[in-house]
Length: 209
Image (cartoon, helix red, strand yellow):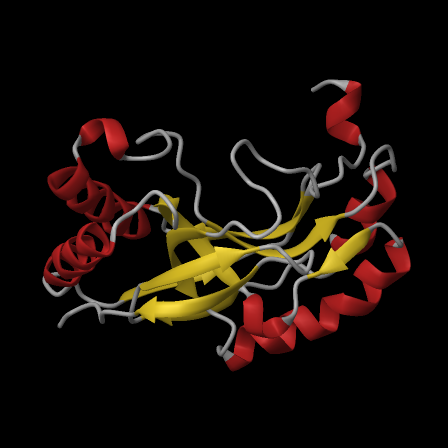
């Protein structure tokens, strides 16, 4: 582990292709309406505020990122409809997924909850990637197929260079596990024009039909 891994790194840099006024289609599990997760996030909020280097994610924006489709100005309405239909058909054959979130991990760019077991979530992601490939071709499936580690973010670091050890020590006393059941996957139109990521919902097909 390097020295840079032991200090915060600001999450708020513009990824390639992103700019003010541009948004992207992406698939998420939206979990902000889960009462147990909201309660846990609320209990952690004072410790995140005390650290002074985080932007806590508002409850309504809590999510589990799955798979990008592409920037909205590069995906046609016809392709988006075809992808949405293919994904809906795919996840209809999969049952709802019961997972556990946590314990909280303090990473360089934020605080997040790992998802266990990861494989059922990975199966949904693979189905989404295959659906995109069917419509747009393998060369138009963003990101790598492997190395996927599902998680739910709780806060993003807004400062670089702050030591992580005391933050990890403070949060280690809150090692709860939050069980949730994932029942539908959501296609969203995502932007960060207001700083924090926000979105509008496009469609949300249910698992298990």
